[in-house]
Image: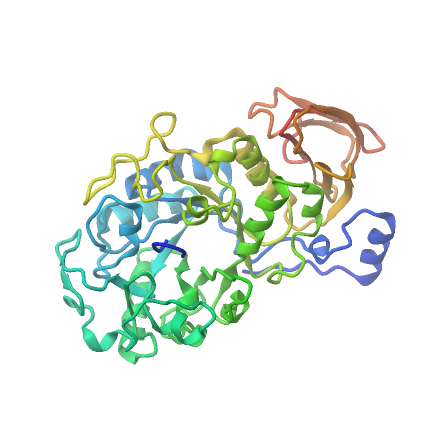
Length: 477
C-alpha cells in the first residue's frame, strides 16, 4: 500500500539433469530456470489469480461463469469485503468502519452468491483484507452500511484502547517502530499485539471463510509485525488458509517481504519493477528475473496492481502493446504465483470506478466505458491456458538476440517468443515440442493462426512488432 491503501508444489530436479541442461544451454544460468511452478494451490483448471479491482459482487459472479472459469483462471481476487467510509474515491474501500460484509460493491447475500457462483465455475475467491487500520483519524460519520464511527470509536468493533499509542503519521520508513506502530497516511493504526484485536481479526477471516472464501491478500502487511499476523492466523479455525502479504520492500528499509513467510507468501514488488525497467530497456535480462528475490515458490507476482499502476512504480494499461507483452511473460515464466490485474482507465489517480457514488458502484461493463477487462483479451486468455498446460516444466531452448527479442520453451509442452521491438521479425526457432501443427494462442482465440513444428523441433514464423507468439501442446490443430 502506498498512498491510500490500496502454496506449494516443487519440481525435484536432479543435479545431473540440471547440469546437462545448463551445458546444452537449454535453461538460463539462473535459479529461475530450474523452477516449475509457484505456491498458490491449484483450483479448478489452474492457479492463476485474476484481480478484479472494484468489481461488484454481482459482476464478479457473472464474469466467473462466463469468462474466468472457461478461461482457466484458478482464482478471482476481489476488493475488500467490509463496511467502509462513504466516498467516490477508490481508496474509500480501504478505510474500514466495521467488519460487516456490506460495502459499495454489494451486500453480504450478494457476496455469498458470488462466491458460490465462482465455485460452481471452478474459480476460488481470494479477498483483499484490510486489517492494519480503520478509517482515518479525525474523521467521523456513518459507514456505507450505517455504522457510526468517530476518531477512536467504531460502534460494536473498536474503541480507543484498540489503537496503537503512536498518534502521528509515519515520517521515517527506515524506523521499524514508526512503520509498524504509527499511522499510515493518518489511518487509525490497530493494536495488533492486543489479544482482543487479534480475536476480532481472526473472527473476520473466519466469517469470510464460512462464506466460501479460499484465501486472502493481506493489505499493508508491512505495517503489522510479522509475529502479530502469525498470531492472528493461528487463531483462525483453519490456520492453513492461503495468505499472500502486501509487503512493499524498498532499498534501505528494514522490513523485508521474507519476514512474513511464516504466515503465507509475500508479493514480490521488485518483479513488477524489473518488468517496467526491462520492457523500457532490454528484455533479454528477464532471463534472470528471479535472482535476488523471494524464493520462487513463495512469491506473488504481477505486472501491476491498483497502487503501482497509479504511482508509476510499475507498467500499466497505458503502456499498450508492451503491457500485453509483460502479461504474456508473467504467464509463461516459472517464477512466482501470477496475478493478472483488471481495473479501469483513469486520469485522476483518486478516481473511483466508472459511475461510482458515495455508497455504490455500478456493475462493470466490458466493451463499453472505462473498464479494462484484461481477462477478456485474447492474449491473456490464451496465456492462462498456456500457463496451465506447461505447469511443472522447466525453461528450455532459451534464445535472445542480445536485446529485445527473446524466445524460450517450457520443456516439451510449450514455446514463447516475445518481440519488444518496433519491427516485425521473421526467423526460425528451435523447440523441444513434438512435431505437429499448433494454434498460436496469443494471435487468435479460434486457432486461425497456426505454427507448424517439424520433426526436429523447428518452426519458422513472423512475430509482429511489440507482439508475441505462443504455442503449447494443449492447443493443437
